[in-house]
Image 1 (cartoon, one colour):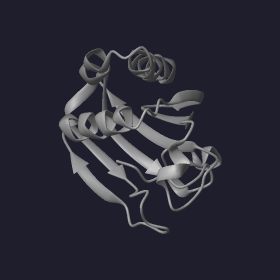
Image 2: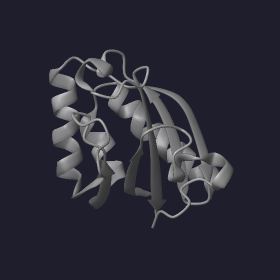
Image 3: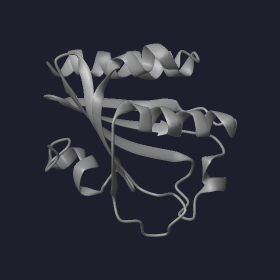
Image 4: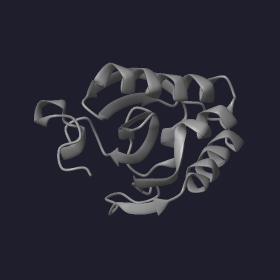
Length: 138
């Protein structure tokens, strides 16, 4: 199952990289739960969004700023996948600098991405591969 979810994740990121937001969003469940960290704050509390339309709006804002994410690493463990991505120039929009990198744990179920959780860095709880990818994420 892990390799299928890694492939699913790579397909979503590949579609997005090619500018095919529609295909990418079709891989995302309509009821997506996305826990994100507000980049305008130094130590943000996680905020939860629901629905793929929230993700689409964020990706459109990113595109309007001329930002494109590049996948650096994808690791799978069961139904969870951790993605390390680099978005050149994104640190200009963040209080907390991260070498233009983002860390996200995705949860896949039945061929769709059903949850996303952003992490501050690779060692933060759910993103720490040593703890079992996505430890504590539902």
